Each structure stands twice: as C-alpha cells, then as structure tokens.
Amino acid sequence: MKTTWKERWISTGAGRLGAGLMLAATMSLGGLGAAAAQTSGTAGFGPVSEYFPVGTADSWTYDWTVRLPDGSSRKVSRTRAIEGREFISAEISAYKLVASDGDFVILSVDDRALRLHGSAEKERELRFTFDPPVLLLSSDMMPGKSVVLTESDAGGSLAREWTTTFDGFHPVETPMGKFDQAAKVRLAMKSPEIDTHATYYFVKRIGLVAYQYEARRKSSEKSLISVDARLHFAQLGGRLIKKYVDLVAGATTAPAGAKPGSSARARKIFKDALDSRYMWDKGFKGFQAAFLLVTDGKSPISGTIRVDPGLHVSVECPDSTARARVQSELSEFLNHREPRAFDEVYGKAEFRLGEEDPGRGAQIFVEGDAMGTSYRIKDNQVIEVNRAYGRVRYETLNHRHIRTADGRSIAVEYEIVYYSNETNQVVDQIKYLDGYEKIGGYYLPKSRKKTETAGQKISVLELTLSNFQ
Image (cartoon, rainbow, N blue to C red):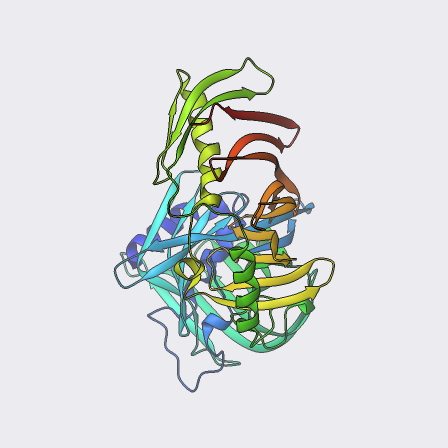
C-alpha cells in the first residue's frame, strides 16, 4: 500500500492544490495515527465515532475563503455529503463522502478510528484505493502528544513525514455559531517539494466544523494556496441544522427536536394517521381503463392500461415515451393505495415525538431511517414528509385531502419541493392535482395534473383515465 499510495500522491498532489482542495485537504489527514506511528498512554480524544457522525442523509456545507498565490482571495460554498455505503469487504462497510465538485472519498468509522479506503477526482477521472486503509483519526490521541509517520521511496530516501498533534479542546467561531468544545488537531506534512499545515476542529454529534489549510513550496517559501473553511449549516438525521443551539443538549441518535422517551405516543399518532389513509383491501381485483396523455400542451396520446390483482401495471400504447410516463404515474397512484398493515411495514421501527404545534400538528421522527425521515401529522392526516439524501433534501406537503364514504382520507393536492444542501435553494418543485372516482365499490384514480418547475423550465403533464372495467 505504501508504495502505491506514495507514487500516486507524488504524481497528483501538486496538481490538486488549486482545483480540488476539499479532496486534497481530506487526504492530507493521511498521517494521523497511521499504522507505522507509535502512540502511548491513555486515550485523550475519546470515541472517534462521536466526532465524525455519519448517516446516509448527512451533509455539511462550508463557507470557504481561498487565498491564491497572487494574493487575491475568493469566497465559495462547498458541500460534502454522505451518499450511501461502499462495501470494502465482507467485514467492512464504508461510506462515500462526496464533495459538491464531484470528488469523493471512501471512509469507514467506528469508536476507535476513522479510516480512508479510497478517493476519486472527477475532473481527471482518477480513482485511488488504499489497501490497507489510511487511518485518519485515532482514539489514542492525547493532548500535547504528536504522532509522526514517515514514508520512504523505493531507494530508501525520505518521501513524506507527517506530524499530527492533538491540542485538546478549544472554542471556534463558525456561521453556525460558537463551538466551545472543539477537538483541535494540527497536521504538518513535509516533503522534498511542498510543506503543508492544517488545523482541524471536530465537534461531537456535528463532525468537522472548521479547518485551515496552507501549502508552501520549499524552493521559494511562497504560499501556493491557503483555505479557511467554516461550517455554515449541516443536514443531520434529516434535519437542517443552521445553528448549533438547534441541537438538543445530550441527544445522540435521536434527530434534533426529538423528545426522549416519547416513542409510545409517537407510534400511536403515526399509526392512527396511516390507518386512516384510504387503501384498497385484499379482495381488490384490479381494473382496466383507457387513458389520454398530454405533455406540455402537445397532441394527446391515447392508449389503455391494465392493473392486475397484484397491482402490476401494463400499458398499451405505440409511443414508448408515453408508455414509460403512464407506467410511472400509475405506479405512484398504486403505491399509495396498496393494502399494507402498519405492523408489517413499521413493526420494528422506533419513533420519537418532536414539537407539537396546534397549527402544524405533531412532528414524528423515524429513528435509524437511512433518509432521516420525519412527518407532520395533524387531524389524523399526514400533512408533511421530510427526507434527505446526500446533497439534496426534499419535503412533501399535502395541501388537501378528500374523505371517502367510510371516513378515510386521500391526498389529492400536494407538492414535493427539492432543496440543495449546498445553497439551501429550491432546485425542483413538483405540484400534483389528482382526481378519484368511486367505481365498483372502490375509489380509482381518474386524473392527474403534474406541474414541474426546475430552474426556468416548467413542464406540465395531464393524464386522464376513462371507460373503467
């Protein structure tokens, strides 16, 4: 691993200084507690997992001030997001941490260590694998003690020397607020051509909240580039955290705002709301219908659809694009009407109750959900769903329901709004207006108007069903 890592680092490191500091700075942690380093004494840092929380939905957005060799500076926003798992082996499951420019690293974390298994540079289409992995953080770190790692080239000459020092806990200011107890870690790297100095601040339950990084060329002692990055906001457990005080003191796995010990009440509220939704029963036999599809005001396209008792959709239409669109829209209808008992879906799930607002209803969190899902429930109806994945989060807002003859409800007017976790801006918005008709004892989907707005582009889809059998 050392030879491969050394050769790749020498050939690519300098070229990344201007274009991909997010990845370069992350990789520069490579000497921290690595296998060749020696440590002694009792642990001072504590469980690493507390200072580097990970979840499929989590992301961190930083304000960067970048100073270039000519003395000019610019400010940019950069997001790093967990975008799923990478299975390194049967024993190791790691996380893919993606930067907003497309570069990424593969990391695994537990109470003892944070390890780097690989990295990739999108712009130059390069990917690196570290086997065994590079250890980034270690629970053996002690205040005031340094960890030194040296690497030699094939001829035995010194290629790199990494010196990492844990400076204890210090305050640090960020746009999210002041963190009084941040674990401060300094990392210095010496090489024949370039020296780098980095300072990292880690906070429990948040992760990396600030860092400074500078690279200097030895031949001139001139600064090649420097970065000061401070956390602006974070998406953790499906919650947008803009201020550190938004986190509940002492919370660990529960999302921000969740009330400890409220799972029984939260489960009942959630179950009552889901049980009140209209679903078909096990005796549903399916149906057939003709359809008319109009997209963006173009000529209508007609065809037929069939839904069998197992709720599988088949579409007959000469236009392949229209078939795919009708298939997709009908599948969404059926997904909400499919008969599913609460305990079959959520029997083992744990719930937490958040705030209860008479105007907005009760907030329910699903613990351990990979997308950090939370709900708003009012008058026994789900009126809001929030989820997140990687660099994007979205919310579903149910604006209007209809009541069936037996008192159950169907959402007929709702919208889905997608937000960038990097800019906090709306990137896509889809509005739905659905129609239902009671036929043969069942409420069947009859129409849909779907309006999607992405940037300056607006697309409208209208689907109508008739001649039910």
